[in-house]
Length: 66
Image (cartoon, rainbow, N blue to C red; front, side):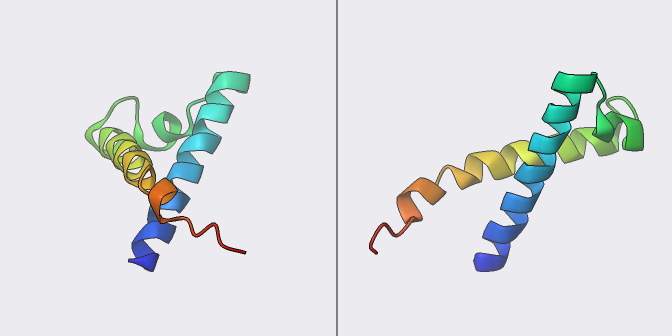
């Protein structure tokens, strides 16, 4: 499952960078690359959102022992 955690984290980071671009420059990189709410961009937005929800489980799996 480590590969899935890394993939999910990567997608969420890409989504966070996209939101940073939207917030600062009003530039949506996903829409620019794949079209404004095309089927492909909607899939990407959905995958990023699902990965974000999945990463909530990371809070329960973090080992806090030194």
